Image: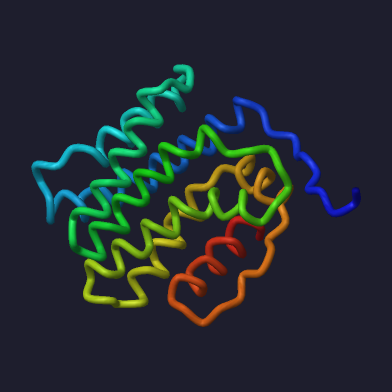
Amino acid sequence: MGDEPREVELDDDERRMLTRWAVACAERALPVFEAVAPADGRPREAVGQARAYALGERRTRRLRTAAWAATAAGREVGDPAAEAAARAAVAAAGMPYIHAIATPHQVRHVHGPALSLALAREAAAGGDPAVGEEEVRWAVGRAPAGLREVVRRFPAGDLGGRTRQSLLRRLVDAGLRG
């Protein structure tokens, strides 16, 4: 009984706030995708659907469909930087569906837009780690206080690992909790 995750308070206004931030991150990553696949509008459509939700529209099938389409675009593009940029769009479109369950998995969804932004821009810069770290600072610097409060409701979980992605995730988490 004590092993079941508890629920956290998370209302629709907070989901909209999280989504606005996720959209900002994804919009910053979109040029990386579009430089490789300028005719593929699926990630931009996903960001547009997320923005519509953030501005007050309801979650709809169009939002989910756009997220799945952006996922496919990322898989198909054949470029690591562009794939990460598509994942930022997917993360933005998925933010309206974050669950109010206190698990590390859910907070990883919150990290997703900033993490994917950092990975996309870093890869586009030839793997320059300073670029990825600057993008994390950019994303964290634009996180509203309410977003930081939401992140603190969720457990951080295991943020170990020696991969570049793990390091950037730790930076995102520390920045949002700090």
